[in-house]
Picture 1 (spheres, rainbow, N blue to C red):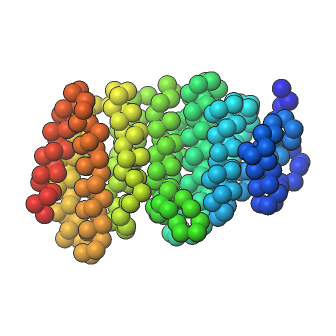
Picture 2: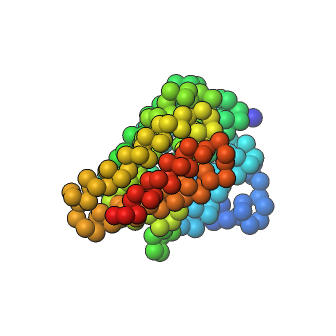
Picture 3: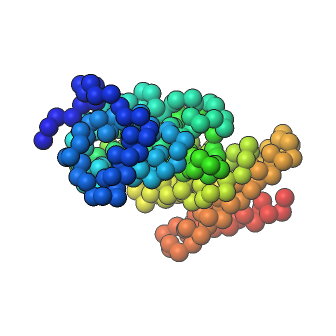
Length: 290
């Protein structure tokens, strides 16, 4: 197989229209990737990963990365490592801290690309432990710093930053290179992103956040750690009710209650999670009195 390296490839990336046409040909006409310069196409997809054109960004670039990395395993490991470095050093934090700007698409779809690469590593085991730990640190930094939590954006499609990074975290915690000692750190950063007061999640972000949390529980995270967080919710809501503007408080309350209800449904059918179920039930009963 030809060695593929972005940094060693001098091909000029395609503009958005050229890339769209090329990817549509692969998708609609069944062209094989070997018929074109794969490196140039990948380089172009990275260049336009945050396009505001939802068809290009979501249905073509992301779906093509999914096909190349997950379904067909056609991007060699060296190039995946190079893509990861680019994601972590540049794309993941592009415009970080901005709210309601188009840079959210770059950050959000970068986390999806990271998720795909982590999936491939979980199958092929090509990333170093140091790299996986670096991904953990960068994703945690990213979640703390991300302010734009919009889901679907009119005319531009899905941003869905919190759902997408939860997908990346889910692949991360499936990795054998992530020890259980890191689970509590990961749990807390996900938990903090549930209880936000700037807006209400309306696009199933709660359920996506729950996926990596339940994965960690299945992998050995002590239920007591989650129960402690749940038990603290009523007290924290009382504190926030005194500090927040009324509308912001009800945003927080709605996010909290929706998350706990979704959590309750997820654990209710698992007899091994009865302590969690009882804790959530008690918490919901308490906060419903507010």
